[in-house]
Amino acid sequence: MAIALRKPDELTKLKLAGSIVGKTLQYLQENITVGMTLNEIDAMGEAFIREHGAEPSFKGLYGFTGSVCTSLNQVCIHGTPNETKVKEGDILGLDLGTKIEGYFGDAAITMAIGEISKEDEALIACSKDALYHAIESIKVGMRFKELSGILEEFILGRGYVPLRDFCGHGIGKKPHEEPNIPNYVEGKPKQGPKIKNGMVFCLEPMICQKSDKPVILEDKWSVVSEDGLNTSHYEHTVAIIDGKAVILTNS
Image (tube, rainbow, N blue to C red):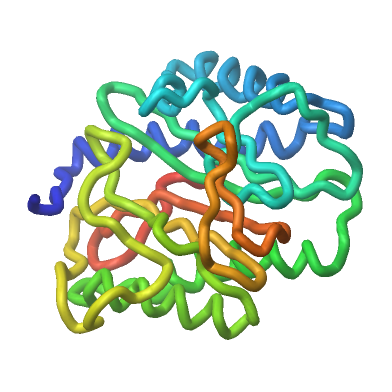
């Protein structure tokens, strides 16, 4: 399947969807407090998205029950909201999407609940820094596999490993489109599609400490590392405009 090249009017709608994602993540980060349940956090996120005229695109997607993936401590991605309360020293991944005017936005952060350990600060910094490093490295004409290689090299260079079997992705009129963008190189890096103006996609480094092997928990959603240690995750939607990567999911 060909990777879509978006027209200016489509990019405007994708930017609107993305900006609501960014504002929602900022709102949650500023208002989540010790003692809140993951269900309460999910409800806050959904209400904020709807107040801004969008739909929470994760709700019901592939059968997911929440509007916000709430990934606590060892959970790297796809954490399901429940009655667990966040406590001082936790780290919480928040991943959410929007749909408005037929177009989608998607982004994620990992945040501290109160004071956290230096180890967890470094873990979160790796996912965030890897994301921005990759975005700044994007050039028209480079292959997506080269971008995966940049992400992998950065993560390994910090002493961590990228989660296997899950990846970034294209986005547009559907929440997940071509191409898949792993945080590691599969096959030969000089093969595969090239980045072009008008492409829109999500980059999302998923960071594990020792083992890159994913384990899916009993809820059939939450993904942890086989090592059982804390993880982190960051994501932005970017568009390639006039030869540069432009973040669409800033607040």
